[in-house]
Amino acid sequence: MAEDVVRGGTLTMIVQPEPPVLVSAFNSAAPIGVVSTKILEGLLTYDFDMTPKPVLAETWKVSPDGKSILFNLRKGVKWHDGKDFTSADVQFSVMKVWKELHPRGRSTFAKVTAVETPSPYVAILKLSEPSPYLMSALSSYEGQILPRHLYEGTDLAANPYNSKPVGTGPFVFKEWQKGNFVLLERNPAYWDKGKPYLDKLVIRIIPDASARAAAFETGEVQLGGFSPVPLNDVKRLDATGKFDVETRGYEYLAPMFLMEFNLSNQYLKDIRVRRAIAHAVDRDLIVKTIWFGFGKPATGPVPSVLTQFYSPDVTKYPFDPKKAEGLLDEAGFKRGAGGKRFKLIHDFLPYGNDYQRTAEYLKQALGKVGIEVEIRSQDVAAFIKRIYTDNDFDFSTNFFYALPDPTIGVQRIYWSKNIKKGVPFSNSSGYNNPETDKLIEAIQIEHDRRKRKDMIGRFQQIAVDELPVLDLFEVRFFTLASKRVQNHTDTAEGVYSSFSRVWLKKQ
Image (tube, rainbow, N blue to C red):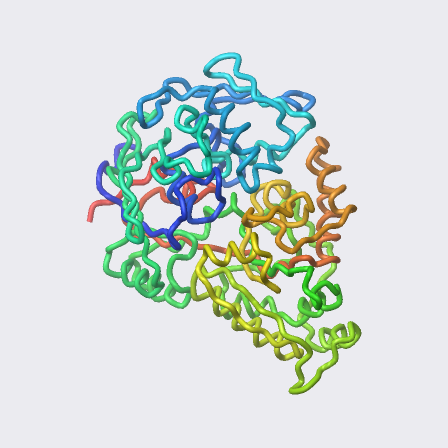
């Protein structure tokens, strides 16, 4: 196919909402990954079967006891400022960034005690105990390597290069015009010779959903990930024959849409109330009507796409408003004046119309069983601060990445050690169960695959029984792309891939 590739050109794509920074090593917000993975790289990438493939690491070997992982690094790689990439950058990124500052990395890499660097091109991760999930956490989004020479000795989270990154990737940062666009240009010294094929990437920020749809129709933009246009516009755009609607490319992320309960709330701390809410909500209706079929009702915290870990044999909460009413009565919250039992405030992740429409449905569904719901809207920064710093909420709706292994993406919601003020997308419910903690920590270090799967199955059952969060559905995001755009989804990372192989057909 190489001889058919068209070199050059500018791809204009969408990111929504605007990322707060352009480095995902300190913040796991979804939009950051869309931009940063074109500039910065990880040790590995993953195919659609989640098999690791080389990026900055060419080969690797896990020791028989699981306590050491040796990486042979790619030689001749340059940072965008011309400095050499070496094992010192890996050591610094693992020990000073991922372990200390990454929202998930603090637990994912907790067992890493040291990174040995016997040569500039060998990095050896030493672990206190086996951590079988680590090999799933080394992508350019989840395990981003930063340049030691630009970060060491600085306030890492406030480093100016977080907004003008210097990486090893196929594209070089040129400009960020806040509220408008991020401009990236081809890296002429990229280690993968001949790539990237594109000359430029223009990443547009278009807050209004209808304006995004119009931008696709006029050809102003050619690609957007994470369901970039309203779901009711998808069929219309698809019918023109000018676009691909691609649902692959989110396997690595395995996104889940869920409801987070604040367990300090006087009503929600009663498990009967949480179970009543589970019975009051029609997951099928949410998926089919609000999300236009781009999802699948969830059965628990581990999505079905993670086939090696998923267990369907857990307690179910079928849609049953009468049962919900009975549980609320049993909890002592009888209907009062106007048929109301009590009031809850609902904060939804403000990523678009579909999130707000879901909030409106929940208000209606819970209202039918006597729970009054007030919907509160705010921007993304205010939402994250309210939920994860101030703990000023009753219940929220949000999507989380389960990621390829439950230890990486799921446990953070349930592990009491991840109740960390100011850390976004962590244990906001305040759930604290010593039995669950013990099981989570055992799963982290279990080296036997069968035993570990059984333990993850038990964890799923406890999570569904106790319901600190209610998993609503497995999100099926789509990427919308002009048919001119080639190779935009060729790994499980989708729009989080480097785009080094993306090219544009001539018009």
